[in-house]
Image 1 (cartoon, rainbow, N blue to C red):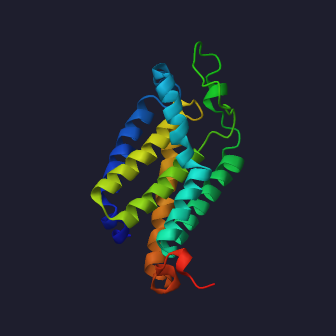
Image 2: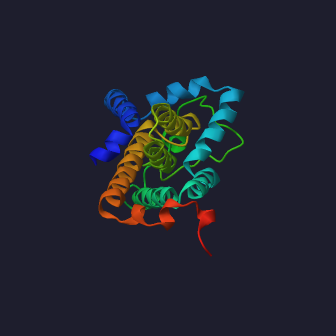
Amino acid sequence: MLNVLKNTGYFFFLFLLYLIAGAVLLFLFFKGPIEIFVNQFHTPFLDEFFQVMTMFGEGILPICIIIILFFRKVYYGIIATVSLVATTAIVQSLKRTVFSDVLRPKLYLKDVPNLYYIESIEIHSLHSFPSGHSAGAFSLFLVLAFFSKNKIAQVFCFAMAFLVTLSRIYMMQHFFVDTYFGAIIGVLTSAFIIFYIEKYSNLKNKSFANKPIYKLKS
């Protein structure tokens, strides 16, 4: 695990600051005030910007990133795929079983007047906790930070993951608490998978794993 922390030191430092600040916010406000505060800052530009950012947490963009990783090195693509699939499985299991009745902001804050919702998107009502987009984004961007081994890239990866979590609050799809614990699930899952494969698997020593996918023999 120390190897994971060493190779992603800047990412984890920023994540630690996020955890501390987030814990304080949750202790002081929990559900409602944070989301209502963020809801005041809607602009046409931010509406478009966060609709793009949220796509990095689920769907075609993460798949495209994983495909690019396979074209860099099969080993990268495998770890990213396993991390994202495991993270998604954990989050969806929690959403559909333990926390299946947790309301999203649309219903929880239904009596709050003048809240703004982006008309062009579907605003969900149930399965709020935890945030799958936040978990997926932090899972994938931690993997990218680990393999980049570059300070600036690590800061960029954290910023991208954070903006995905912020997009979920901005779009009134999730509470901060949903995104906060989603991020934790994503980071812990990817960190464990990276650690396990790096330490206990012989995968990275396989010749095929160290080649781009297009160079593999048919």
